[in-house]
Length: 98
Image (cartoon, rainbow, N blue to C red; front, side, top):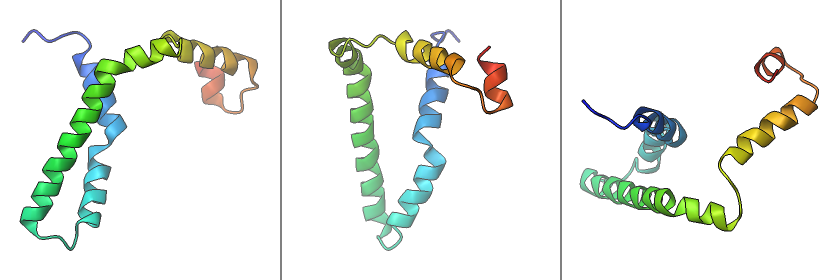
């Protein structure tokens, strides 16, 4: 199978960000008193809306960041620089950002 090189990384990032297991628990709790056909309709509508929002941000997010003059390496570079300046309070940060 010939997949793009970053497909797995992108999938894992979206999977962790969205948290489908936690989201399913919240959805089940919020729709506990709703009949099954209406619950299916709500789920389909929710997935559609979330997909459209995700697609809009995937297509237009770069334009918004460029309007704000933010480059993608900037946040990670800045965070590493700040971590080097700040006193490390845990062993993880002392080891990770040397």
